[in-house]
Amino acid sequence: MKKVKKILPIALSLALFSCVSSKKFKELNANYQRAQAEDKNCNDALQKARADNFDISKKLADLQTHNEYLKKNNSQVLGALQDMSVLSAKQAESVKESLESISKKDAYIMNLQSAIARKDSLNMVLVMNLKSGLKDVNNKDINIKVEKGVVYIDISDKLLFNSGKYAVTEKAKKVLGEVAQVLNAHPDIEIIVEGHTDNVPIHTSCIEDNWDLSVKRATSVVRILENQYKISPSRMAASGHSEYLPVESNNTENGKAMNRRTRIIILPQLDQFFKLMIKK
Image 1 (cartoon, rainbow, N blue to C red):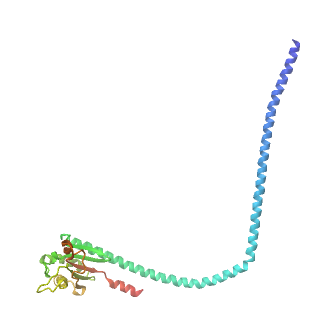
Image 2: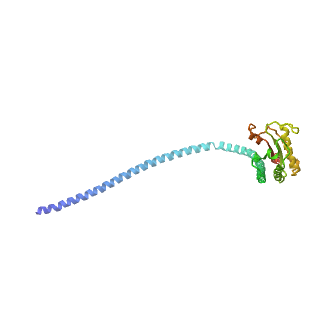
Image 3: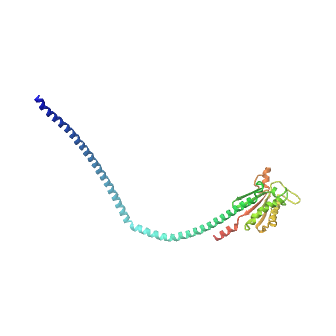
């Protein structure tokens, strides 16, 4: 029993020592592993630093080589720069002249654009006033449009004349009066009155053919505008085109009806553009 009591403390001591030693061993082993990892990291960092240093050394060598090249060619570069400065001085005068020329052309273009804008505005006012004055007229009998900066008023012949005649009807005179009112509000614009027919031949004691009829109808309209509505004859011209400027085919009755028309053309003020061209 006494032996057992003696052995028990020794066994307990050995067991305790064994537990402590195992714990210590694990701790030491962990420290060792960390040291190895840190050592590896240091080696990797050292290798990277050496590689970076090599790159820096190479770049430094390249820069030094380039610097030597620049020094060697410095005189040539300076000479070239001097030549360039001389050329630039000569070219500067040419560029200045070119810019002045461009400036003049820009001013010319701006004047043209301004004149075109004024003309377009005038055309818009004319069309609006004409449509307002003729709002009671059947749309099939009168057509007002703008094409390429020119105002056209197409009036069907059935509204203006009796068939085969060139005397303006009383009803048509009221329509021409509305047109004349707008034209008189703009005394600077010029007017052409054109007569047009279909291709059906005509010959009477008073009319030779379609040429004759188209011209006489245009002249009749001009006389009404001059005598009754006081439009200056110096602003007007009369012409006849017979059947040769149709707006539709003469192969149908509807086409023939559309071709029998009188056209009043309101011309743009071309003298403004000619004056601008002269000033260029």
